Image (cartoon, rainbow, N blue to C red):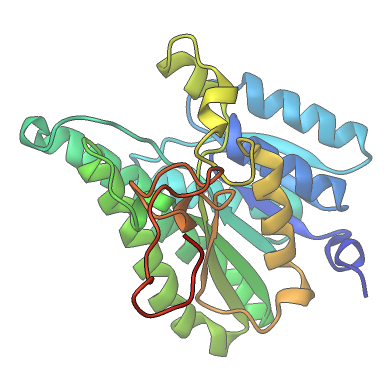
Length: 277
């Protein structure tokens, strides 16, 4: 059976689907035949336009607002999504916020905001959405974390901590849910080009950005969408509790090892191996 056949008619909730990765994931699921509820927090333009695109594909779609600083609103999102879709077969926990600030300057309010949105809301949305999945004995949860969970970048102490928590949450909770018929895995994107990059980085040049990436280009939201679709399909039925890094090979290239495109200036092993001068 093809992945498209697996997902045709599935009911999917994607959080943080107004922009960037979440919007791309929602559209990708619809292209494979799923009906989608797209959550957004503030601006509704991106989520509503994506919903219109999905409806034009002949699928059902609705944009739903919820403040992820409010657990009651988070639980209400699951209820509204289930009411519209009939049930939730796949939950994609994409909603998250970032912040870069030196460690010594982070205040409790900023800390709480990132953990409330990135971890607490995800935890209780998953709990609410999984009730129906557990009752039916079948469902899929996909959590979006980040390469920041494994690799350090200065001024990202709080953000990286939340992303590391998602990896641990995925590993542990998957063991609780798997016997109940619900599979949980995570995706850790590297650099995926989204609208906020252009807002935050002045004169962003994607060719420069792509230089340290072995794949030779910066990824797009649909790259994450394709992986999410695979993990939601029966083709991934034996995959439980894993985190898949998708970064074009950047993390595989040893830091400070030089340009991987050029031959090394230094030759090691001459005392032990017959290598040319």
